[in-house]
Length: 503
Image (cartoon, rainbow, N blue to C red; front, side, top):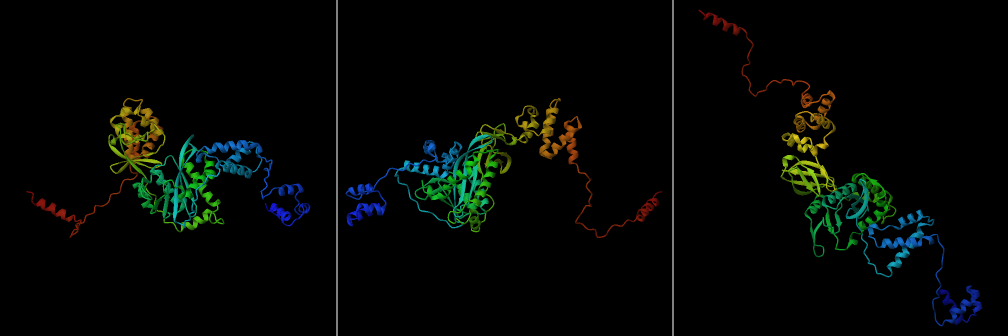
């Protein structure tokens, strides 16, 4: 446009000939005449330049991927980097920048001129606040592809973050995620920023009014931080952790989905290492010269001391069945048979289940999130077997007996009355302990002809003291005024007196 304005000034105002204008500007004479024929200043338009690139043979495939991802949820969308890697696997030899530019133009064309929201940038001082959020991810754990709920906790100032994977988003998972995050950060900020998740908010009122869940409020009181909840449908108010969910999918979780994990503990240990490694690699967005781990060291001096972990269990009542089992989430767990038909309390932790009766813990099981599973502890049925020894032959709980007791049981049950003898051996476990009974059973098996009497005899010898207890002199608070003397002459005098009296 500047060149066109200059040509018009030279010819129409100063009267410079077209040939001279051609010499000064280097523009062809016919082009100058064409521009001057137009009576007004009109911007010239040129057809877009067609430039051949290495991406030309893959644009249709890339556009198909982008269109397919546009109909998926944000969690399932692929990043441009992953698309670039897939194109490279198909033979694309160009650079990543060309693919990113095409994806950007394609999305701009699809978006059109739609107006987007504007937001105010937020800033936090060291130790002021953290943000918490959940994300749903998928990974292969225990040989199966499972849906996992990942807890994201991120410090607003230092940008240090912590990820923990769980089977569900229930209260006990929420409490455990806070305990692990605060332990990793080395302290507790002053505020915690959340959305209106059901495990924290029982009822959303007008404005900022919230009815906070009692158990969640107990947890905040334990760690001494103030909970703050976003407005409804205002995720930008905790945009730091929202962005962390998206970034961690592309930087950490895309590697997790390609691996196979034996258990949740193994996966969470790997996530912990990845988080710490990222702290040392990522630059802080506000201080690019510093790493996240450097700013975290400064923020740790502003954090409140981390107390002992909150005992974040969820307690539910359950009735013990006639087979000494309690039902929880479509699974069954054994309880000591003495509590059959009673109502007990189940304390649910992320990794275990505790059974409480009369304010005392009576059983502990590893928690399972599968379905239709039954978990026995054969020791819970020992007292019942004393009264019903015949149940030993097909008792389901006794399939998990230790190997030494299984061998002994196989020998004894082939004899008449062996079930009652085996019940006597198992009855010794609560008295002497499982380790001692196992040693006695192994010694009896080594002897060649084990029997119940043999096991009990060996157990008695193992428990007998190796040396007799030393006898100690009896002590008494009484003291004699005159100590007795050993005087045999007094005995002789008594004998003499008796002899004189004899006729």
